[in-house]
Image (cartoon, rainbow over all chains, first blue to last red; front, side):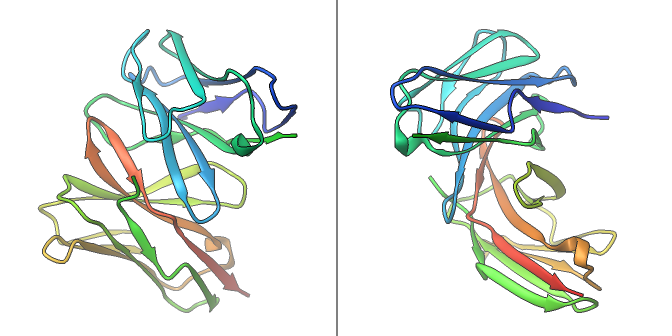
Length: 112
Length: 110
């Protein structure tokens, strides 16, 4: 069965902290994605990766960076967390050439 | 950039009734997908319809696509309380990326 896991379901951090959100997929998918979800705005793409060590900016990359050292793992980094980064963060993966994406359960991040 | 826009924003129906949600988009697409999200969870893929298809069925789901009007609809027949969730349309933006709408919140009352 397809599985995407995220390191935490809930996370509380302080302003200025460096935050790591980790995502792991076990389906050997080439593509991985990070989204944030806010009420009324739907899902917005932060970054995506189509191969190990490859990354591309999405629609809202400011304040975030990513790392993909292994095919199965895609990390989202908030270099210096701010209160406007309080949100639900969703990771997804998918096969190259196919659009269907498989989502993790999400991490609800609160920055105080 | 938000391409898909769902309508209505929220829908409340009785169990057994049909639920219809609509999605409009702005640019040409290769395909359109619908996803479901249960409260506080990740999204689950429901159905994909390609730009050269007009209608597609999967169980109690029926999706239509009108590329001339740049719109799609999702019909859930004989709804159940377990169908209570948010529903999102997503359009293929090229390069395996998807652009999601803001979603429709469906509540099915038992």
